[in-house]
Length: 313
Ligand code: G3H
Ligand code: 13P
Ligand code: ZN
Image (cartoon, rainbow, N blue to C red; front, side, top):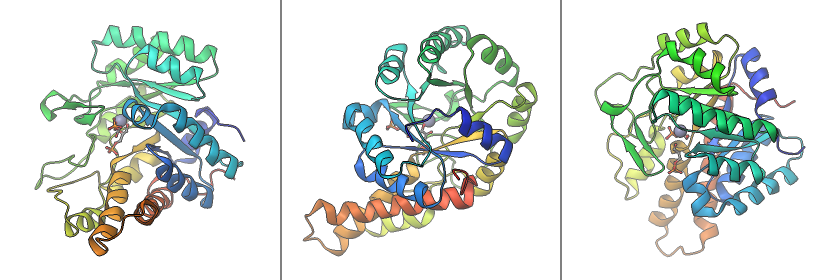
């Protein structure tokens, strides 16, 4: 099977009450870990590359790595998605070079400007058989070198979503309901709680429309502990509780974005090898442990959080 768009994935996910995992890719081991897990569990998967990932690995390598995974797992439904596309040109470059889905993230711009940029991307993407995700509301945290403080973040206003989707023709919508990017999502001592009331209001206005959740890592404490016990210093790293992600996956949320958890898994693996064997210097020796952690984390998400196991059959 060639790369697919997310249209069919989201339709089935919405109807089936589960979500598709969108995992960030930056190198070969991450692509391998994610796709091995998805293949073994027969789960559709979205592989997404940020601007930073494309600059780090070179987008050509990322596309070829994904094609490599497809050659190995021809029956696996895989979408290749641009994460947080900053402008029309970046989206166009991805559309012209094999991506099947792009996100245009003009969420920091005024509402009318967000509509205008998004509509331009939608026109070009749809003419080329590619689908588009856009965002309303601002998440806190770090994305592509931009740090948004908690004070500057804002929840999505449900009164805006109908007009935005109607005027742009966008295929899915990322909303801000209390998640944030990175490994420090909630203040220690506070109770992490997503705003399901906002999600419900959005769904009322956009029945049947696929919603996307960014910043949805749960920051598994077992990996934080391994990192800190092997020379790391991740203090007060807190993620979204998995039961809340499960609840979101059962609703209109069809795409759940996970990057930080994979970073933690990879780092925990590499740190463990170096701590236990300071003489190690073969990259295969430490990267394979990181890759195995990535695979385990993705398998856990598919089975126990997203509910997408077997959806590819
Ligand atoms: O939204 C942020 C993603 O985790 C991507 O992060 O821009 O550092 O690649 P990045
Ligand atoms: P996390 O930092 O929670 O993994 O979020 C990733 C993300 O939203 C990518 O767009
Ligand atoms: Zn994001």
